[in-house]
Image (cartoon, rainbow, N blue to C red; front, top):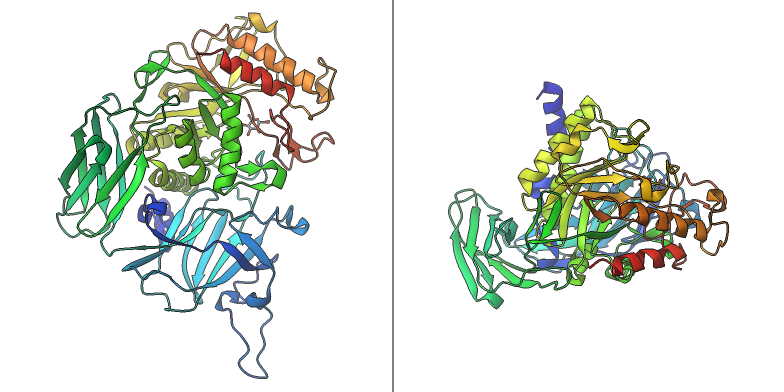
Length: 589
Ligand code: GCU
């Protein structure tokens, strides 16, 4: 590593809410929710920090005054994005200060502030002192505040900025709304001094009766005993940590019912140490690729997929609650899916946990979306940190089946190096899941009369994922039944995105693209399904997308700031194409 990179690395990790301090299964701990209405100050020129508004000072004498007052400032909901909470904030990109008082309910030996997500960067201050910072709009972070809180009143300030950054992940422009704010739960978490920080408990990739993994305790103070208990399997095993607090776990089980979409079986798993105990529901399954097939529990599976953004269209805002997760997932289930690509960034933990209860596999990705500063070592560190954070949060979610390391990135020496690093990191941190990267690199070869992809990264992936909008961005080179795909021979191939736009209620003009008609969209889906039936190694499709979603660069009046490729309109109405996909999925056994 060059000196510059080293310096950057330490700069980023210093005083940052860094990934390695994150605990897993935060909702399985003693938690106090800090959700609710927070006072806010819109800081358009970014002067709040030099004004030190985080001190939350009040005039003490007749001659003192401060040009801010959190306690009387406007209120915004937390969690939520700010854009959907007032017309003035619809397009706001900049800084907003959030502030609130709190008193800790539970005085465990240790106390942590845990943020589910803040978009995009933030600085956190407690009782007037900076205690941490974070970059990344879709992954959790925590800051230890043990010994820093008053018994009764504390003032917490979060300086949030959602300006897009050329060295950010995502970069400067992307096809979704730049919702800013504290967009997920904020929790006070209390733990024993020596607590169970992280663990991974899952079936060996290929064996249906061997559970493996590890448990990591927070303190590095010698060997300690940990116990993994799965009461329903009558299986309680003791393990001993090494001096650093890490215990490897491996034990065989009998009569385990593996998790699947048809039977989403979850088990109570209790992990205990001499000073701590955490419990959560965990499902067990085997997932691997062999030849051109994807296997779940030793049987080939076809990914009947769909994608959605983390957005409630009717509310014109971010999704963040259990009720939101239930709405999004129920509509996907009704379509007949067995997998959802959570595009294009890690979505909230409610969605993760509810999907596995509903028997829906998940594809998760960090927003390495199109133009990213692949040459910048700082950007690479940000990508690593985001993957670490989401892996610590989700690695015990059995529904999580696919890691996506990129979306539509252009092959280059720098991009290939960046992605190869992410792919190997993914595999090292999590060997039980599939790794892919959605590519829009398929080009029609007129000489061979077929579609081809020229991207060396595809060789590193468990399956090839293509985004291809036949009939929308790309005209048909021949009739759909005659289109040939000479891609990913010997590997599974999925279409990770395809589709076209329609404004709900716009009927007729089935052959006019610019009509934005449901009939055009429906015919497009029929044509793509016809094409799919001729692709021998096709193992999945993901219509883009389940719902119309907001995007600042969708200018046409029929779009009005919405990407209309949804199978369901922004008002919640199913378009004609929804029924075509539903029928197609019903016919796949
Ligand atoms: C791309 C991209 C999506 C985008 C879609 C579209 O494939 O991956 O994020 O929304 O095209 O243009 O609708």
